[in-house]
Every structure is written in C-alpha cells, then in structure tokens.
Image (cartoon, helix red, strand yellow):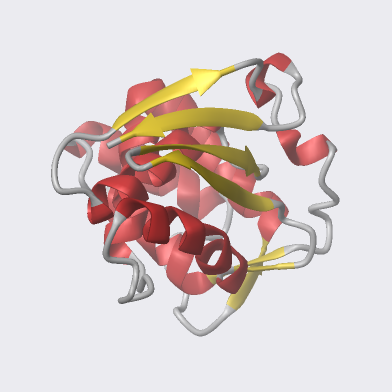
Length: 180
C-alpha cells in the first residue's frame, strides 16, 4: 500500500497516547481471533499499552496500524477509523456536520506533533461539502474518521464518496465529497 507517508516527513512526528489508546480500544471490538492477532501486532510495534499523557513516534505507530490493516482489511480499518471520533475527546461545540468537519483538523493537530499532515474541509451547499485528507494513515482509516466525525453531527444519513485519485494511487491526498 502506498501512503502519503513518503511525502510527509514523519521521522520526527509524534502521536498522542490517547489516540493510540483509541486504536487499541477499536481493535478490541474485532472477533476474538482477529483481536488477539491485531493486539499482538500493536504490541510488536510498541503500542500495546500506550499511556494517555505520553507522546509516541508516529512512524512505528503507522507501521502498526498498517499491519492491522493487513489483518482486518479495508472494512475493518474503516470501522477502526470510524470509532476514533467516539473514543477521543472532540470539541463539544461541533454540533452539526459542517462544524464537526471544520473542527477535525484542529482535533487531529491536537493529537499529533510535527509534520503529520491534516484535513481541509470546505462546505459547498447547505447539506454537502468536500474534505481533503493529507495524512499518512491508511486511506480506509481516514475515510472512517471522516465519516465518524460527520455522523456525530448529522441528524440522519451521511453519504461519503471518494473523488479523484487517492493516496493508494500515489496521489498527494484523498478527497471525499459528503452529503448529509
């Protein structure tokens, strides 16, 4: 899988322990066999029991998430990403979809240090918008995070559709159109 990690200088970047704890919590939702294998993979990369108030190197954390992606596939990685907004503290004022998606980049940056990319949201109409994901995480993980954040502010259904080339195809970023 090709990610944006090569374009971003993740060597010095760090990720907050509470984000890694959310990944571990998400993995625990898998089937028992898959959960055990995924937890072992996370442990091999040093994130089995991350501490909430600590910071960890981003590169091995990404390697662990990509290894988990190899175990659970795109649907599992999407589900893992979708749980992240529900397990991390998110701004309370993000009560509707546009506000939640606009706050996503700040929330992301609060959990990362260094050159770890980010998100750019642009509202197009009353009930649709576009978001660009320029992070080193697997595409399915980002897609899950975006849908999870959007759903947290929606009154009903959220539709997410990838447009253009994505990082898996060596693009610089993944872009999604959303309607709610």
